[in-house]
Image (tube, rainbow, N blue to C red; front, top):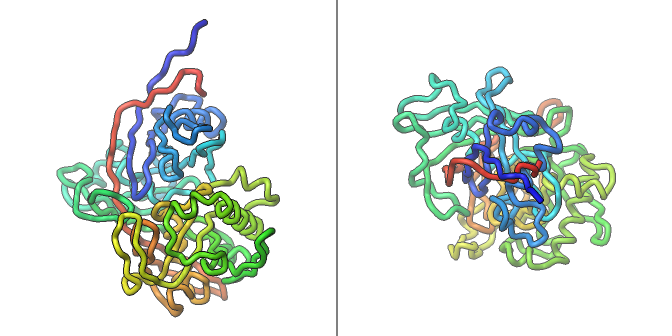
Length: 393
């Protein structure tokens, strides 16, 4: 009996922010995978090592967490005033599924750096020394991201002294701007039209919730209403199956209320969005790194789930939602931060703290987000070829 030989595909393994994934140029993918569809999904699942009933990704490039089961495609942009198109696939760990419904804010950082590394940027836009401004079209959500990538001797500067909680080693700082991060359409940043809703959650009851679509659709609830302090670390939530089930029920209820799904069953095919997060006022706590975080050094606490698990730090897109909601007086996030008008917040997450800025304003009675800004870092971990069986897709 003969079996298909492995094929190799040019690929780059990169960390971006507190995530990492396998990056491809569109032109390097097998022809059948250069367009959306089953072949592309099958390829990405095989690259990552999913679906894996052992939840270990031993036979793939994934790391068996939502932060590490990711693939990215970049190509030269056909959008006016943009350099590259960036398409992101979140690969489920134990299911045969790739979610294309949202962006990864952390890997947006790596997308800017990879665009230069991969020769997708016009050389005239890359200085010999200084900062290259990479204009990214986020093709999952049709939004613009601007990455300010440091360059030294014509190459991306990856090493540096910028420290990011949730990442072990320092690196060079990359500033990201998310332009108009809320969804298009009248009042769509708050799909229900309310800054705070009474959210009916089967089996749990009625919770206050801020349902916002900025960066990524997110359901914010108050930590105290679901029995938490906001200082919880990953293991406290992820080792509690009943807690994860309750939080998934909140996510499903929020998704239904936001109009993202029509039935609860559809949530299984939309695992990446919306996110669910719980917020609280500032408190002292010890981060997963062992560092002591003082209440006086943060504005609020936020814990967020991704793909059914508490994130070890904070998703970049969820940070955009946090910053935007914090800038709008009356949301649960704004209230947790002390209320009032603010253009930036520093929040505590399981790995430490993160500062995010946002500009939001009211026009004709509707809130609109103009931009959100944060700093991350990125670097290449490995480059060359990824190999998969020739009949995998």
